[in-house]
Image 1 (cartoon, rainbow, N blue to C red):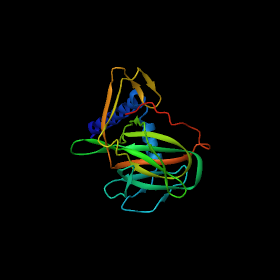
Image 2 (image 1 turned 30 degrees about the vertical axis):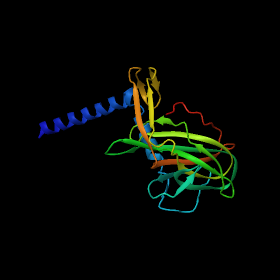
Image 3 (image 1 turned 60 degrees about the horizontal axis):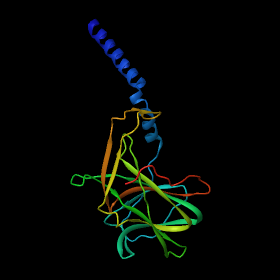
Image 4 (image 1 turned 135 degrees about the vertical axis):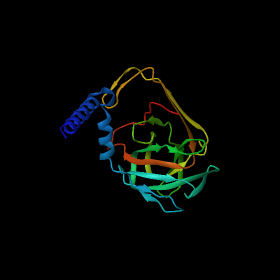
Length: 230
């Protein structure tokens, strides 16, 4: 019995030592921050596309999840067929930013990874088409414990509403990203090496999921500058 208690105490001390080493490791220093952000951020409400529904009224600053797929409404814009969700703002915004975070979709068959090819079809107050704006370029965003995302935005004047739609000119093209980061450190991500080359290949598709937010550009300063594109 005494030997069993001694062995248990040694096991507990060993486990405590391992946890202490992990907590002090610079490579894992950012892990608690990632986990905390994932826990603190509630999932965005989902706009379910199931047919020719009416417009979704999106309050500025609110983030929603949008799925576009085979059951989405279909329209013809400039002679091309698009799938879409109609977005309406409560009031006209003189200066707005449309921000998207496109989530990677994983498949069992080739291509293994696809992303929705997004664009915005801008509408006036009467619902007539004003312009078609691709949501490009898209920058790569990779973090542990979360599906890879691409983020981008466009700046729009006098925005009353728009169609969040697929971009047929992009469907089938490949998103490519390659980078050899400089050696250094990041407060959340720990250390990284210049020898670690990262390559990402994904196929644009006419179905998928993204996070959408529209903000008042005058009230929320920022820009649509992107560091990397595909």
